[in-house]
Length: 153
Image 1 (cartoon, rainbow, N blue to C red):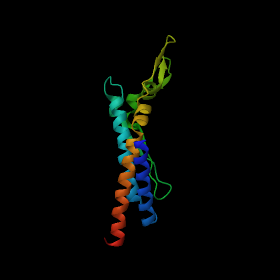
Image 2: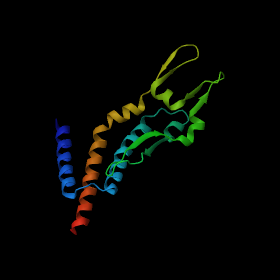
Image 3: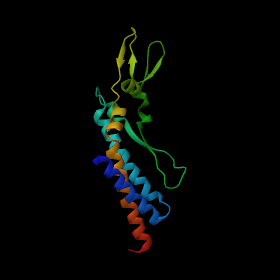
Image 4: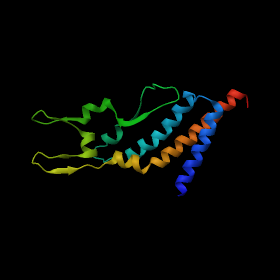
């Protein structure tokens, strides 16, 4: 119950700040979204299985191009510049993507199944509330800062 009360209080405070300011400026949204996404990225790195460490090093944030003002989306994904490491080709020419096999599992050549670690999914689920709280608190702080600039406070 206590988790919900924090979330609701934070949301109400955020809604009040947005109403006072009017439109949410992009420079308030982007850093807040990045800080929340960093929580998920860091958690995914911590949970990633380690053989040579390439999987952990390859987890990055990728910002999507904003189509609406006041919106920013970050995706926790794998660095495309490391595809030479991540894409594996078998002797028969079949291609596989190493990060996907570690997340979801894979079938061996003799028909066995190796289950995945689901480290990306676990990172998102286990850190959902922490990321939401970070986004709300940062966005509230950034909106208040913009409000103070706008009104000379």
